[in-house]
Length: 348
Image (tube, rainbow, N blue to C red; front, side):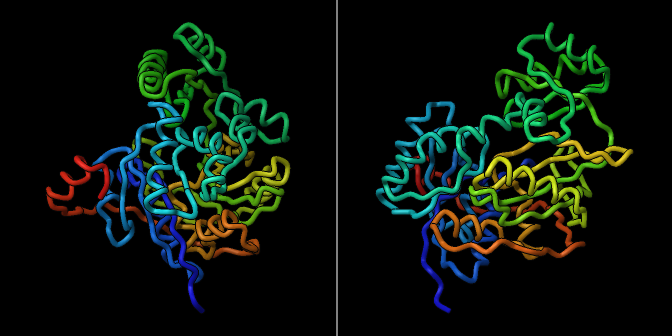
């Protein structure tokens, strides 16, 4: 079978202690039996390790942070596209999705396909909107409230009782066990991600996650649940195992069916001591542990690529239970000339 050549642009090359999804997405697509990919990396920092993984990324360009303005980011992407002619763009960071979703029609007119949620889907699953999301779709959500100053934070903390969760707008989540810790975490995440900061009721239990893919019509193309086996101090899974948990899949399919979710997503859940499942976050893109799903028999990045290109995509019906992933640290040796070339020319 001849593989179909395809050029894809991928962000999220920061494969560090809080890894981006870019590298596992690329690894999955490179294992595709259908596509012969050429990969264009889009990097925000010149020390993102994926830039220098030449067996995975064919060429990398520097792009401006979304915080510098959506127009600047999109203009740079289109400039790169005129040189590289990529077929599909796969963004992997929450903070950049607003710009790419907003510009999807423009990208499409330039020949760049995407498979992203709609703006309405993206907005209603924000951390600050989760309580309303739970009511609308009939799922359990811990009580939470967005706050913009310490007085509001203190009111929320007293209402929910310690410990509480203090969460950033896009990333970062900390368990605060007293008001002193809550204030420290409030200032830490607001300085990094801005307002609002989310104060959420703490639910004690087991952390469970699902990586899933929706086709935009209500069909779940793929869904794989896992339990974290090792968690870093940043709350990131450094190890996990696929599990058999039908209720997780039922909730996932229900949300995708009701929202008609388009693209990749991650559901972060807590299973309490009484067996109740609470959704604590809905991430609107492929998570960094997606390669576990590929290893368990569901190559969701490949399926996302097919959906973006308008190809027929048959939903996965099974996955292998008991597959584990374990992350590890690896020293990548590069020459200073590569770093200089990237810094000076904005491309490598």
